[in-house]
Length: 205
Image (cartoon, rainbow, N blue to C red; front, side, top):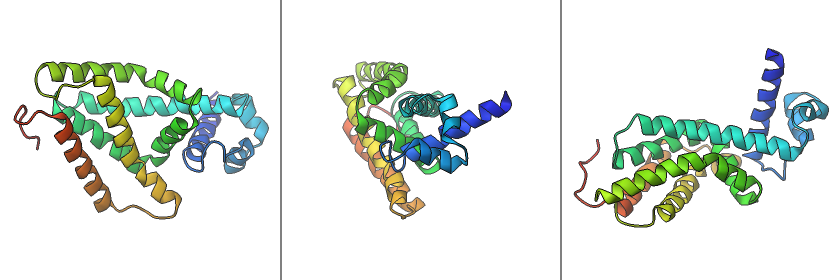
């Protein structure tokens, strides 16, 4: 049983790296099998089709992303520090697991039904984030706006900037830590200026 679980996890990880790197359409089941040194039939034993494999990879990726963001939320106080912690968490993922954010970008490009599955997987997290923004706006800490539009804009911006790591690596350029810190700082400054009501919260350290 342990060997079965291990093989399934290896298939998922190899598919995540391929779908989040070269891309879903550029990757065949034969490619994944060759990467693992197994037969295509081994993959089909666990996942009956390439689409089924993508679904499983989406579920895995969404769970990992949600877990990382939940940890960031749980370890930070409300207000701007919580948003800052979430952004920092995404950037850590970009450096440690670039294929994860690459997969999210790829699924967004593919559109339905893959993008719909990702949206459904992340919906509980989105609902909590929307509630947080509504509470912060009601308290006068955040600028009044449609929380759904704020989330959509922030999500696109943060994921877009963070996935630059994966894009650069795809063309053989290893991004430097200083450059990533600078991009993260610029993004945080932009988000704070756009979201936070001046003077409503203490400066984070």
